[in-house]
Image 1 (cartoon, rainbow, N blue to C red):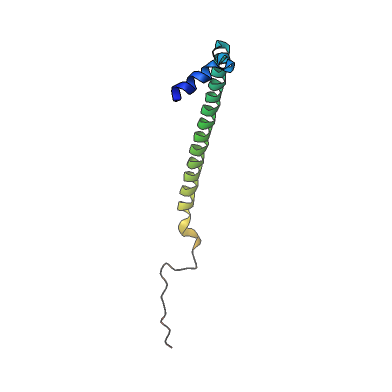
Image 2 (cartoon, helix red, strand yellow):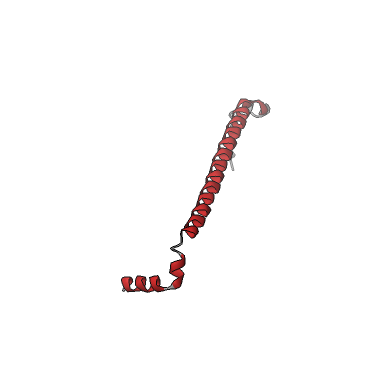
Length: 85
């Protein structure tokens, strides 16, 4: 069944147009440009993620230095009072 369908498709004149090498060259050029664009977008995304992670790590280091300085009025351990009812 599949072989018969394939033979019928090859008999159609549109299939002869696909045999021309110029069409293959055009399709190859489109695929080549598509690959270049996708590669450039992928590298840009990786670079942006790397740069954002480096900026976030620097910001976390700065915050870690000043973590203990802003809690002057609050003691580290507070005493819990038991309420008797």
